[in-house]
Length: 146
Image (tube, rainbow, N blue to C red; front, side, top):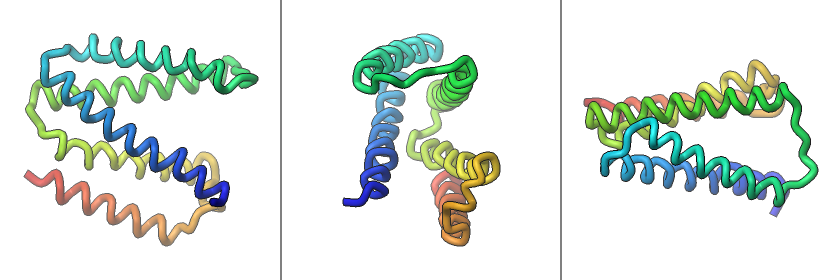
């Protein structure tokens, strides 16, 4: 197996499965009556514990004020997005099966920004990326139609 394939499995396939499980856990949690604030606190505790465990599993990684602030931005964006998903589940009764395809269009935002900010357009096949992006939009639109 090539390093790229291994990286795609470790950084793509396994996280996809975990993010899918995360949505199921969120739906289960909100379905039994947790508030949005307590949900984020409980999820935050799990994230902190995971971070502590990784301090020993990935030693030698330093951090700077800038890297910590960027990480906090990532956490804030995740927290706000997750809160809005919970609002849709709790207050509007939107089925998870309709929400997930929509909020997973986040890949389009990430890809667009990575192409621009990190000049990743030099490392990817842009025509394939555009075709895949169009299919994502079509899929999200089909699933979310009322």
